[in-house]
Amino acid sequence: MKTVLCYGDSLTFGHDPSGRGRHAHEDRWPMVLQKALGEGVHVLPEALGGRTTAYDDHTAAADRNGARVLPTLLASHTPLDLIIIMLGTNDLKPWTGGGAFSSRNGLKRLIEIVRSHPYPFDHEAPEILVVSPPHAVPTANDTGMGFLLSTVEQSKMLSTFYSDVADEFGCGFYDAASVAKASPLDGVHLDAENTRAIGRGLEPIVRMMLGL
Image 1 (cartoon, helix red, strand yellow):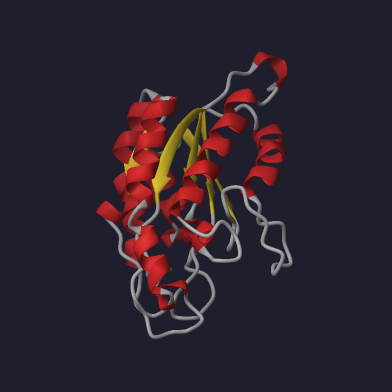
Image 2 (cartoon, rainbow, N blue to C red):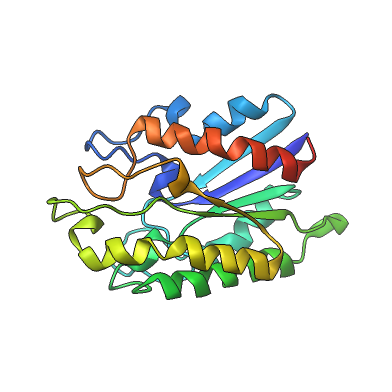
């Protein structure tokens, strides 16, 4: 049995941009990936709305600093064969990281944590698949990140930064913007079909990285 940890934010959680809460279980991309890979793989979703790569958000009730939480998750879910990291959108907020370059640095920190973690029982560090999230799009909704045009532009820079980091550290890379687009309802979250598209799009590279 292979085990895959999906580490993400509201895009992995399945936040519905229509304001109806959360997409159905079967529509969230980790579950679409689970169904595509079959019974020989266990896909674990670890998602929290607002999670950053490595930055505090003191406006939130939960700890959204991905770097601070990750070591605990690595310990609780070991052994892992692959960790899929799709974070960075929330780093673009002015009160967290502030831009795509901050996301790049935060991603590097997450990779370092995965590689240096003291895994028990001689377990090896899992492979890492870096996923750059879909771009934010303009919206008239002033509660959505797409209302800030600078956020839209910064989000388009993530794929280049993330691809370079993946090459530098020897990680897999996938650009989710190649298959999914944010909803103009709030400028950042995905409708059910675009959420499912990420799970379908990830299947081939995940199979390759797991040796299936």
